[in-house]
Structure formats: C-alpha cells, structure tokens
Length: 565
Image (cartoon, rainbow, N blue to C red; front, side):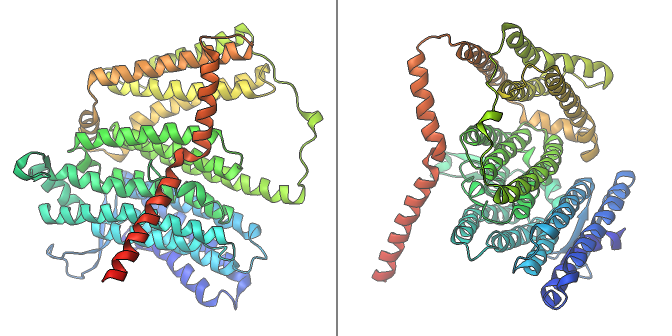
C-alpha cells in the first residue's frame, strides 16, 4: 500500500511535467496523458480507501531516509480515512473536469498549458490532504495559491482575469501570514509539527500566553494557535470578511471555476478536520468558528439572491455553502462537514460545468426567450400555504423521530438534535420558497418531487451524522469529545433556535400576505428596508471598496516612507 499511496499524487505530477515539456510537439496526446493519470490516481485512491477502511492508517516517510524523530521537517505521507476520502473526491472531480475540458477548450491557444496546470493543481491538492505534518501542509498550502494564481490568470490577455487572480493571491497571503504565525507558535510551545505527536503533547501540556502587560489578558497557547490557523482557513474557504476574492474569479474558464468551487475552496474545511483534536482543546475558538460560519451563510445566501450573472450566483452560493461547512466544524460536527464538503463538491462541479454549457450555447443563440412562453405566476392558495408551512416546520421533526427508531440515532444529546432541526428548517424553507417561485407550483409532480427530495436529504444527513462520524473518527469517545467541546451555552443556543423559528414563521406570513396583496404592519417601512438591503447587497456590503481604500492608503504610506529613507 505504500507504493500505491505514493503513486496517487505522483501520477498527476508526472503528467503535468510531461505535458509541459512535450505538449506542443504531441498536442493530440495531451488529453490522453492528463486523463489517464487522473483516472489512474482515482483507481488507486479507491484501493487506498478500502485498505484504510478495513485496516489501520499508515505513514510513509520519504525524507530523511533515516527518520529518528529528531528532524524538524519530514517529507512523506499520512494516509488515514480522512486522507483517503479526500483523495477519492479530488481525483473524481478532477477526472470529470479533465474530460469536460477536452471539447470545451478545443482550439484554445493555451490548450496544452491548461492541461499541464490542471494536472499540477491536482497534484498539489492531493499533497495537501496527505501531508503528515503542519510544515509540509503549509508548504503545499502556499504552492496551491501560486498554482491557483496561474490557472485563474489563464486568459492573461483578458485584463480582469489576471487582475482578479492577483486579488485572490493577495487575499490568500493575508490568511497565510496568520497561518505561518500559528505554525511558528506551535513549534515554539510544543516542539513538534507532526500531527500525531502534536495532538498528544497539546492534550498533556497547557501553556498560557499573556496578550497584555501585567497578565491582564491570559489565553491558552492552543487557543491562539488554532485561531491564527483558522484565519488561514477563512481565506482559502472564502469566509467573511476574507470572501472578496471568490465572486471575482469567474473570468477564468468554466472548468477552472468548477475545480475551484468543488475542490480548492474546500481546503479550509479539511484543515479544520485535520486539526480537529487541537480545536477540541479550544472551545472559545470553536465558538468563533461557528459565528464566522453563520455570518458567511447569511451574507453569501443574501448576496446570491441579487446577482444577475449565472456564474457569480453560483459563486456566492459556494460562499454560503462553505459557511455551512465551517458552521458544522464550529458545532463539533467535523465529520458532517466533510460529508457536506463531498456532497457540495460533486454538486457544484456539475452546476458549473452545466453553466459553462449554457453560456456556450447562449453565445450561439443570444436571443432572449419569447415573452409569450412566460406563464403568469399563480398566487398561493391558503391550502398550499398551510401545506408549505407544515412541511417546513413539522417534517424535519417527523424525520428525526423516525430516524431515531430506524437508524438508531440517539436523541439524548439535545444539542445535536436541535442542530439537525435548525439546518432542516432553513433548508426546507429555502426549498419551499423556491417551489413557490415556479410557474408549475400547483403541479403535484413538482411538489411531490420536492417533498421526496427533502425527505431523502434529511435521512441522508442523519445517516451521515451518525455513521460517517464514526467512520472518520473511530477512536472511542473522539467524536463525542468534539460535540462536548463545541457545546454552546444553553441559553444562547435556545435563544438562537427560537429566533430562527420566529423568523421562518414571519417569513411565511409575509410571503402569503404579499402574494395576496394584503398589508401587514408598516408596509412602507418594510419596502424601504428592502430597497436599502438590496443596494447594500448588490454592492457586497461595500467590503471590497473598503479594502481598496485601505490598500491605497497603505501604498501611499509606503511611498512616503520609501522617499524619506
């Protein structure tokens, strides 16, 4: 299995080298080399996943050759269940994107260069998820930013393409500075960067850092380290307020967008999972992770609603879904975050590739659809409104009770049960609201398909929460310790769930009365608020403008400093 594991990242690497050197001479074999290497890596990933599922995790040390445990930096691979699952996801998505790109980019002057970069970036991501220590992970984390810059600026003749690629590179540097500081502090206080040894020492040793003179503000070293590393994860996974790069990366080819939104942007969720035992020692940081994720969900979903560009809509959708993933980590559901990551990766890759097909077709048929094909929207009846309200609030509770009997999901932990209800209420509300926008809203086929899908999603997530958690973290009590560490104050938690429920109910009342042409309390005030929110969201909360102004002021300050000295 050692040879098999080593070949998984090496196959895309050698394919990238071969295409870079011989791509122009043997242009007809470029796609064959790239696809063959990725498919081969995917097959080996499946073999590796099976091996670690029935056996034990293993480690491969490539350098130094004689590892006595004293080396500061070791180069190799750590292959456990988390690594194997991520390898299967990465190679699967990369294979689909390779195949799609064969025809999509045919005739492009940078055809060979694109497939070389695609193979290189696959190699780098595979190396990130298989790193055995924090330093090697950080090295490939940096390399990922550089390769991402090159592939985002693929259309370098298009000015916005390389400008936005540079913007992405700079934002990632901000997070990477914090990541590097966390890495330095880790070695300073614990004397190792190897994951297994680091987790052991962190659980046994307790170091305190004084942030203010006179010991006025003391925090644990683990909390500072995990917070700094989380900032690095925020930048890679587009968490607010370091999200500004993600919506502006749509000038690259659609396959690049698919790879980025299905694979690269998930790096933050993987990083938190890799360091989950360390984060379990820092409950305060987990609460911060939850707050950042929740803010990203709300803002990403809201800004998505006001977009008029299909790819930017998908981009803000990814931002919101990454917020969900980070939220789950902040609640201690690390394994569920990986399941969310996999489901979102496969789904979003297909959406972006489908969007590319639609855009390509629209270039050949730029006419707008005939207005005669539009059907007037049907107003919701009282029966359909009550049905939607009941399904939204009651169905998740029904699924939870049935799952308790069929899947033997424990409900003694109210924290976990209410988390499921919260996510189900929000998801069901989004689905039903979307259903009400369809012209065929009265169709029982459409309604039945939507309701059936919601049941399937609910049961799947419950199964994932129970089974996938124990698959990734099979050690007795490990998964339970994550939930205990992330548990919120009961008063805060209950208040949050209560407010979410009230907002859902108010939303249903407003949708119904608005569709019926009826008025509610102070409709003029609500209309003015809607307009202000729309302006605020369409301008992305002016965060981009604030960053530009700060950047210009820093640049002017640097110029003055340079002229003076």
